[in-house]
Image 1 (tube, rainbow over the protein chains, first blue to last red):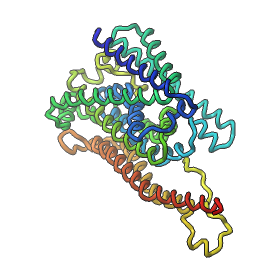
Image 2 (cartoon, rainbow over the protein chains, first blue to last red):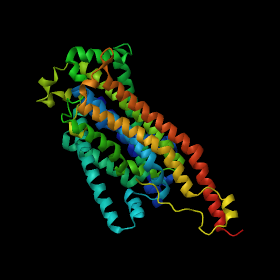
Image 3 (cartoon, chains in turn red, cyan):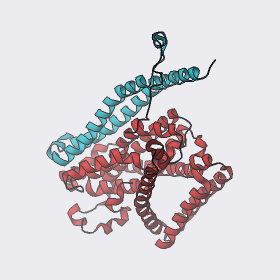
Image 4 (cartoon, rainbow over the protein chains, first blue to last red):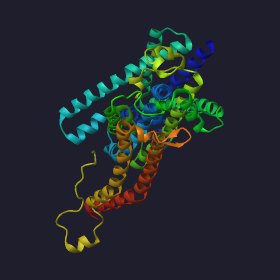
Length: 318
Length: 117
């Protein structure tokens, strides 16, 4: 318990150190909002991956797959495909407008002050819907791993996020995201390799085990998204919705030109895409190795899954 | 879809002689972009939304076994990953080798025309 608390403290100090370093280097508006548009494709790609390899993806996609089978794999696939929309339509024009926020770009395109108000409302609604579950999830996780009370955990996590952004601007945010992406990807890769080593690195065995234990229905769609239209709705939401996420779009103002913007999308698609494939395999592996009872027995009480670090389903869309 | 709003960079009153040597216009660029990107859009939207339609309405089809217990549904999910990656690589390649040089030619032509030399 105290070891995890130590690791938590070390990461917190490291990120606050990054913020201090970034704050000293940040003087102009462009530096604050867009890291002076000087990031390389790989830096921005890793930071984008940090956006995506969030707790909701790491625990949510994995948890959904181990609970509901294929529907979890659909949740993981969506964001990768959605990056095609970002790459083809959004990334380069956003970068080329040379603005700082999504609201600026929409105002520039629409030339009406009211459009800015709409963009502001959208940003607040999206970020509120995003932050609530992320903060709640962070509080639960910190409590589970370190024993710090839930309220204190939420305040510490929220306070440090405010410090990163308010003092370090986009430079600190970017490097904190890069640190997070590296930690997440490394942790996920190690756990996945250990899990796969149990099945001689043959993923087919994972599917076989899942089917023998839980029946063929587990490997079919519809266990979580029961209404057929839900599947299509989820797909549409991903493909067209991702390009409207303010915190993802701000990343495209931090690179010097369109070429770098599109190369950073390529980075995130391969980093996060591989990670998403990993969550599906990890989910199947966790299910078969955790010895969970059949789904019918567990669905009335998701709380029994806290041992897996599972989150509530509707929040899982990262 | 947020294509940047573009006007033709070539002035309307160019003489036929000018037009012969004229660099590609923004309209040419847009039409080339559409020509390359439209098929890519059709492919990824069709394959992804198509898969969600199958997931909703054709479960027995997705249940067909391919290798061991791996069914067609998971195989198509895997295929969608590959499609997204391949399209992204293709797009970046085309954009670097075709779109960027054209943008550069248009920009240089515009600058030289505007700056009296």
